[in-house]
Each structure stands twice: as structure tokens, then as C-alpha cells.
Image (cartoon, rainbow, N blue to C red; front, top):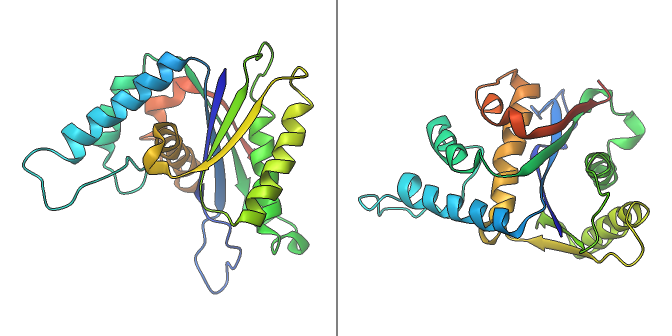
Length: 216
């Protein structure tokens, strides 16, 4: 079984004259192929939330999830030490938004789906027989979800053995530890490209299997 957790960092705004959108947009997938790894990732997340973000003396506000933004480097480093020895891979594609054709900038969903596909295309699927589950942070309308699922399913089916089950989940990141990890990794990769900040990226660099820029 292969679990793919997909999240993004940055935005898909293109008005560089009147607003201040990000220059880059990153889609990141964390790939996990062992159930025990999934369990260990979840346990490490709970431990980080309990010990670092919700300690016993801090009762004013309960932090429900680990996020790349708004979480200190020290907390992310603590969380990383708990999972550094686990077996998983990180794959990312970062879009240089200033190079996107003018005629495409209004088709944000099409851009998002295409960049997501570029990432997923880099994930090895040879030998996957028990099934693939793709978990995406829930942020789309029902029509957008249907379009995304249809587009990505078509690409995955062309690379998988006949009969391999595909499951798409658009879930609440608070309920999926894998999505929270994908978020913090996506944030680190985006910081690398957007600000040339490697402080967090260097911590998990050893797990990065693919990291490229589209339209460099």
C-alpha cells in the first residue's frame, strides 16, 4: 500500500503590481509505503503537540495541528528528530509564477492540477499492488474536487498495474497526521525557493527525493 499526502505552500495570486503575492507556488507530496510508518508519524505528531505546543501550563489556547508557518524552528526540529529515522520520501515541484503565460493566470485550478501531476509523476509506483491512497487537504469545491480526482486518477492509472485500487480523500488536516507533515515540508521547500532560507529545509533534506522548479 502506498499513501500519498499532498499539500501546498505559497499562493496562486498573479497581481504583482497591486498586491504582494508569493513569487513561487510549491506542491509537496510525502510518500509512505508502510503502515507502521504512518502510525509512527502520527505518534510523533501527537507527542510534539502535547509536549511543545500544548504543555500542561499552557491552557489559554489549544493548538490542534502542526503547521509550517507560525511554528518555531525549534519546535519543527524537535518534531523532526522523532521521525528522522522513518522510511518515507518527499517530492515537490515549485512553480515560478512570473513565467506563467498570461492566458493561463485566470485558470488557477488548471495550474494547480498540472503542478500536482508533475509531482506525482516523479513518485515511483513500480511494485505497488495493494493500492494507492492520495490524501489532499480539503479546500476545493465539489466540482473542483471532481475535476482534480478525474485528472490525477487518469494519470495514476496509466502507471499502475490493472486492478490496483485508487482512493482519493480530501480531508481536514487536523484529522490527518500525514497532511500536517506534508504542510511543514511544503513550507520548508517553499521558503527555500521564495526566500533562499534553508534553515528548516536542511533539517529534512535527506528525505527529499525530488525538488525542482517548473518554468525556472
